[in-house]
Length: 137
Image 1: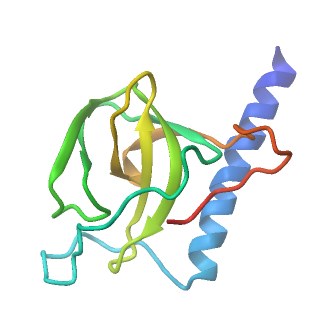
Image 2 (image 1 turned 180 degrees about the vertical axis):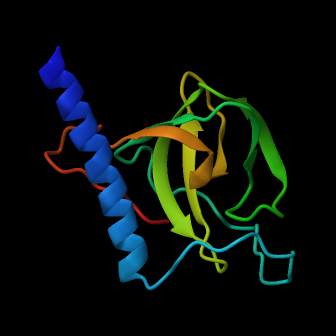
């Protein structure tokens, strides 16, 4: 049992390191929310994969899945803390905010949510191809 917990922490830590490394490699950093602008494109954002590797548990509270990777995009669905999202892909918007596109477990509800709204993440080889791939949209 203890070994399983250590592995889970290792996988979670590896996922966080991978995301942080990708952000740094792209030269992006998190910034506070910016006012809406014409550059906030909410159209045409759909995941390009049926299921990427990884998932996350939504943190406590009530959150909106969005139609695109901006807080100014329309709400698609309401989700509640403790729900699990299967990740399809990720994107950093023009403000440097990291967003995840995915499907809520047990439903066909798909949408975008800020990475900050996850209580925990699990990066695992969901499709059993021998690789953990965090896909970018």
